[in-house]
Length: 67
Image (tube, rainbow, N blue to C red; front, side, top):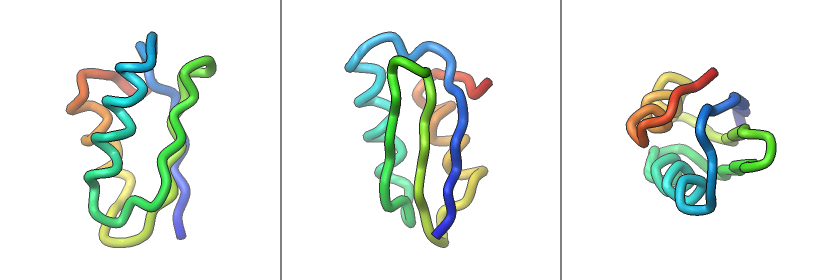
């Protein structure tokens, strides 16, 4: 099991938090997603076939930038 942690710009409310979480949960291989609105961070626990590039793309598709 792999772990990916990053800071994401603009997690301002519950709707954005849910949008990011839902997007990441659609990535095949993602097991758990934790979005911390207060810290502006996202942690993803995943297995193959998911990889960090897929996770980053999924976050960026929601319109948010990884810091």
